[in-house]
Length: 193
Image 1 (tube, rainbow, N blue to C red):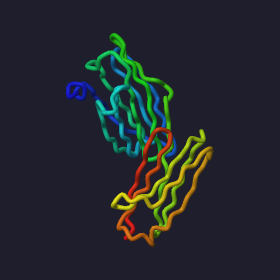
Image 2 (image 1 turned 90 degrees about the vertical axis):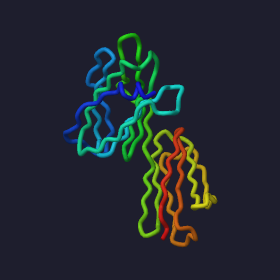
Image 3 (image 1 turned 90 degrees about the horizontal axis):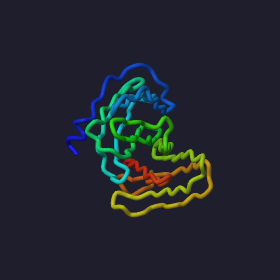
Image 4 (image 1 turned 120 degrees about the vertical axis):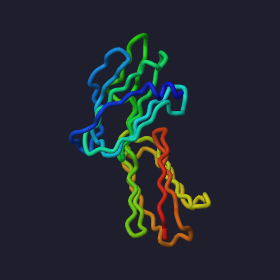
């Protein structure tokens, strides 16, 4: 695994971007080298996974004020299928990477894209807002610091979900909101005191 991580090379990042859109644009594919750029690059986590493994083969955190340009050399990767995961503050997207013979390709379109739930705390009133355009099943749970479940609700067929919680009356010092949908789990802990 270490040799695979060492094999992944990256280049510079610069420019301007919209913080509202996650856009990966394949710039070139030459041999086993793939180049791409990403908008919404304020804080981006890039990870490469094997399709059978849940453990990341490579990971990188990028902090920028604009577009991120990357070139990955995948020469050390054996033939097969991989997933490039791009995570920003608002979205999580996955792209297919195929390594075959002396070439590597990356999909132009995301194979999956999920808008992250927006969780805001204003003076102990916590709002949870979920954009769910494909109307996937959604589960929202609230647990205290001892993992006691304080709230749980399932939503089916809803394109948007908005809930408010008053954490000012909580006996716990912190609570964690857990949102499950589109085969993803998002969690955020909020201090109540």
